[in-house]
Length: 453
Ligand SMILES: Cc1cc2nc3c(=O)[nH]c(=O)nc-3n(C[C@H](O)[C@H](O)[C@H](O)COP(=O)(O)OP(=O)(O)OC[C@H]3O[C@@H](n4cnc5c(N)ncnc54)[C@H](O)[C@@H]3O)c2cc1C
Image (cartoon, rainbow, N blue to C red; front, side, top):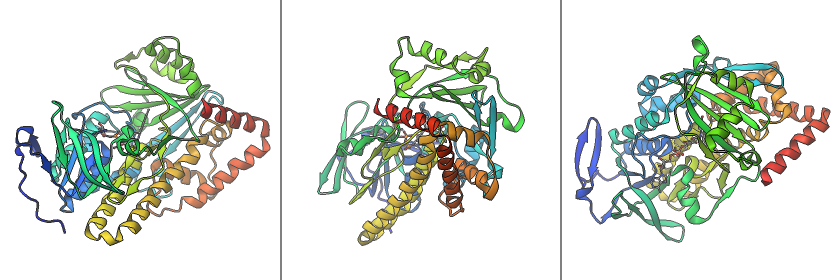
């Protein structure tokens, strides 16, 4: 068990349930059991769990909450995580319930709705659409309330390494003051900044996927009625696909995930380009007629990446700090939370019994990679004509459709028998490609060429 929490040498004061640290009292070299880099969903969740287990946890977050972040559509199987963290009522209060995921095709003039209540395990019939500024803030405040020392405006800038062990961590605050920590364990939850992966030079572009995104928020977009109001809608178009994610306060998050060649050809300002892109997809354009763009338009390129390693002697990479694939199945936050939960058990076990470290960390790695791999197969093929056909004309023999819904719900880590049925789905996919070789070869070539861009 962790040693009794020592009285902090920083002067501190309380704000509601949150402990804030006054930088005036800072010392030169701080110790803690676990230092977490980044206070997004992964960092806040693992900090909460480890602090509850009695470890002295420090979270360093370079920004200040609440702050904007993309990634607003959550999955039903994240709900048990919220319950365990003790934040479900707060997430319910800020979120809009999402009962289904919808796919719309202008090529078929048809759409298909996948209700989470029809998943193999129907216990989690909805998820939430959230403004990430609010969502991330809830999780971060919760980490502080559960006993983690949380510091905002602190950017981790370096680590001291001996063999494969991190011996020290350096961070600077907003005034440029530097401070050092000597933690027993380090968790990198720095998201797309991929702090440790960059430091070690182990990050690379995903060799099987390449896409880029443009996104913004609208007010006054056409919304669906009743229980369908919160559904995420995916619309395919010639250069990729769109998301429409309804949020509270009449906001609609709209994003276009495109092949990189399309973004590279941009010759007009990004906002105009976004509007021109929307005009290429009649379904999205119709729902945005009369809506007002109320945010900046952001463009992100080449965002599919992975790291060749996710652990060392006394460190782990969790969430996006390890890998990110693509947002089409809204899997990012769920995978980040799952790796935080698995990571918390792993770090706890390693700190209690360092002799078991290698086996525990290997188990952690297997689980995280399995989740990423299961989503990847579908994500890589989502724009192919064969997948479009299968999604728009789903059939439920052997409960294959229900298994796809379980995947969309994020039910991959609890032993629900999803795997065999997804295998049948894949077999049907390959059979269909054999029966339509011309179209399938064209789709394959297009994907290969786009990865090379
Ligand atoms: C275009 C797009 C759309 C997406 N849509 C969805 C979606 O609909 N649903 C979904 O689930 N996911 C979506 N995602 C993915 C989702 O945003 C991420 O998977 C999720 O935020 C990962 O959480 P995280 O905690 O690992 O990282 P983050 O949420 O990125 O948190 C990392 C934190 O670390 C901090 N940090 C970074 N470097 C340092 C440093 N050196 N020192 C201190 N702090 C640092 C950052 O400020 C940040 O707060 C989308 C992603 C993209 C790119």
